[in-house]
Image 1: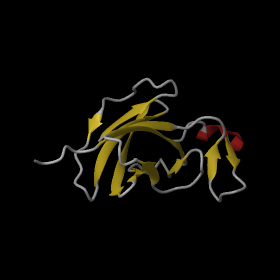
Image 2: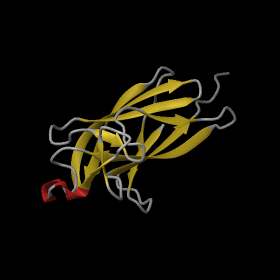
Image 3: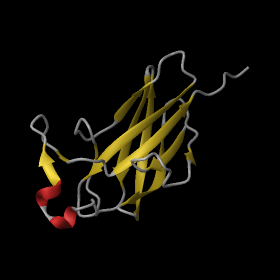
Image 4: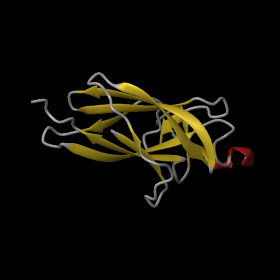
Length: 141
């Protein structure tokens, strides 16, 4: 599995982080950029029959939560992998809460509520975009 932070145009912001996970899953510490400032996160990966769950957790107190950008919920994001796919590349988009989130110092105008959720999300663009590449391990033989 490879994790790269990209900007909204798809340009890499970090070097690729290669993670070798056992079948049960794993965790990986990451340094990601929030508004051009490096912040520490941990990604938790859990593999299931149809794909993988990826969760992003901030390790610095000034970043509150990493929330899935489009659906507006906190917790793991599912990446579906079909049985015939040997590898899969997926973009995961997150919005952040807390004082380190971009525009947090400009007041509440950068936030808007989602009537279908109890959380808040940023209005137009995610704060973090991760490109996740899942590679099926070669069969032992």
